[in-house]
Image (cartoon, rainbow, N blue to C red; front, top):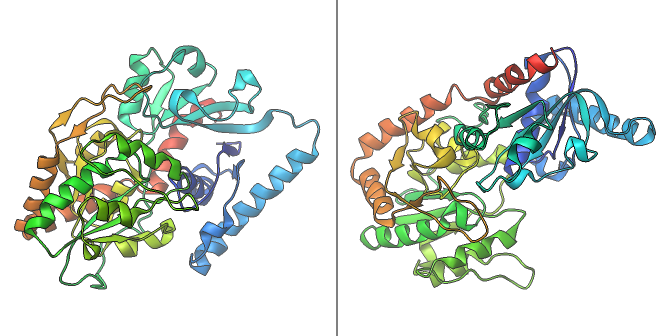
Length: 394
């Protein structure tokens, strides 16, 4: 490509969009031959603990992004035009920054990257036609858009960093335990209530089991959405507004020694935790993308259980993870839930029992997961993004 890329979202190692932005800065120049700039906030504190060579390589695009933002802020003529490709972040019902026709930034090619769960998409065609191209984060997202009449859409799945997320020896920090991992921000859509119910049943037969969770997020208010499950005690919050995860687990029948909350871990440190796991479980009701955390578990060679719905279908299609196929309908107030799936708690327990009982099969499935993800590196996937956008701005 002859022109640079400006993406309109933040860079961080603590949430999905931020990791996406971080890897655009890392790899766009290499795959496209032009610079990439971050138009959003850079959360420098989230880079703490990153190795010095990675920081050294990341410094130039961070500095250039900052310089570009300062130059544009100081130039009264910069306005809403960028001499290159502009990539907007879009979410449910096309939320995000101002759309191009509403005064949002435009360029030689103006595109939108979209991850959504709400299948109510009013004015989808008109809004999407405001962009040269819409880039969906999963095959399911693209299919829903096309079913709503959108034609200018393609799919570019997220990636994993193979330097971080790959099979490697354990430290045996949890030796003697059967470690089950669950990750993703705490909310109804992610299905942590299902995880708790399934783990409680499984652990009654396997007292060595321990549930290791990474459920923290910058949006703790989302946690209240899990309270709609009548089989689960409600989430409680501390005086500082943070979710009391341990107290929630204990209130739902888990013992003190059966639950470990690892807290908010930067992406560059997460693999060391994942490699201690015996299995990962994601009975998510909906994923607009392919679920970055599940992808990273698979890349580490962890036997991974995923619901066979929405964005997870791209992972299931690899044939590597254990698929939860008993998917019931989901109703969520105020949201379209076409294609969502309610995983069956008993099927989750059955899958956990299968991993526990047949470790050799689990090892083979974990190896298959890792092999499947070798083609979805960030470098490759950003190359796919470039291929979609290059005809707009060669």
